[in-house]
Length: 220
Image (cartoon, rainbow, N blue to C red):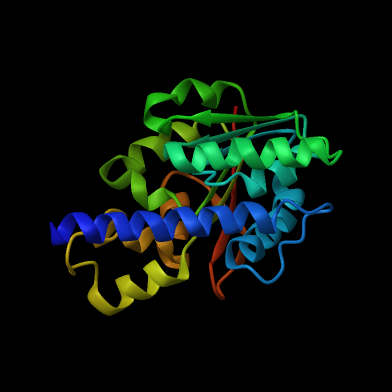
């Protein structure tokens, strides 16, 4: 019973945070400042303009803020999110922005796990992943080997909290989804080594806060 109440309380907090996220980003033009997810989206959006080609796949798109920002000036954006509640919030936010006159129809919200929709890799030029690649766990290297065969540009953004966790525990703490040894991919070193290991050279990066790594390679 106690475990059930704890689970319900956690879900309630998560739902409230998602509603607040949607409300904060419902304004026109979107104002990402003052909210952590928004600040991250704004920072990544800036770097995407420097490296991203016209068609983009965002892995782990959450509430869709970054994907919708990108859709205003890219040919096509696929926002991939496996969590049903976050996917629903993303659709809601897209509808709000559309009602307010923003051009967001070039963004397609897709509810799925990348490992189930590898076919999406055939539809895009650039892959972007924000606070998400560590959820691939043991599949992270095979997935990025497939990405590296097709895309000259990849942009990864980590998670400072998970990176600190890995630094403190070496990934040997209590098992939690996205933590454990795979939390190394939440920090700069882990993301950079992942991209370099599949053939990318690091052409731009930010090490402070939620680290950003931009990889580039020649693809036949």
